[in-house]
Length: 403
Ligand code: FEO
Image (cartoon, rainbow, N blue to C red; front, top):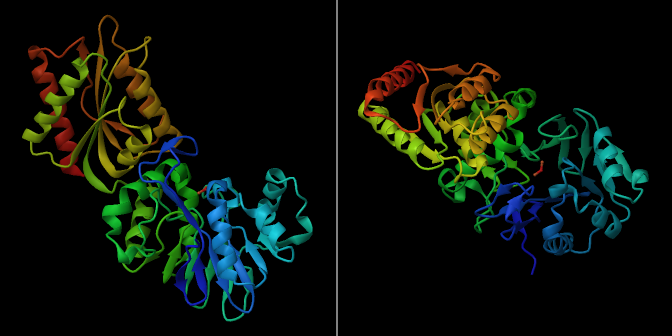
């Protein structure tokens, strides 16, 4: 059964949901699935904006057939060549042999890399600012290099200001029937997953995201059609644009503390509980505590982008740092996280090194400030160290107060 929804007169959503996939990119857990959006414009010419992942190809092709209702496809616009969106190119090209494939130079190099079929005679190349007239509607292209692939581009429908935004403004999470963000509690349903999606997948490329947002200038689209998640309409648009400005500039969204700890036998965990309670007693609010061995790193990254302060606690392992904390810190560095303030607690039984390793890894990131003196535990927290912990909690509370 086809599942087509109307985005605007003559613009249809023809994508599909995948609730079976366990790991997006074979990496990120999907608790609530994911959508792969594709959009069909029916005008004097017909244009499909992107395709979908191979896992939902059958549903997508059924949708597309029904939406075209016997019309030929004139253009396949390829805004992004990652296979979760480009997997259907060869099938669509074969089914509608007269369709031109619209992309930029880098798009076409990737089509040649991914597909054995020679589609080059059908390429219709566009550059920054070029337009594609379809009849009443026209698409204008905005290149978005390294958001988060080099060929990425956005297409702005100029009549109503509808932005086909590729991966930008997308989110994990399958659909729930309603297509538009203003038909649901978008913030409750999707904000955490939009943050996890952005920070883990695009997070490294903040500068490029800001450059692309700058190209849009003061244009506030009437609708944003991302390749994952709901179509954005109404207050979700300025809301998410503001979030993107924070995330892309590595500015915290919220004054608060992400307390992330690793603990092998529970001694570091016990110290962290005492530290969190001490912070609470000092009036610190908005804290989230996570065991880095239990919580997938992608969630930790999203929280680290959200909060202004970090408290990182871990035992020594192999004369360095416990693996899960090491992974979290490396991921923070890979994703360019910066401008955070962090308190450190390290543990070790005979040669404590964890506090030094955390400080050193933070030191390799941009503008990461270590707050107070790291608290060093020898196997477990002792009552005699309460003063040291108190001083660290004071330093963190004071730093929060200055935020
Ligand atoms: Fe959803 Fe970059 O692919």
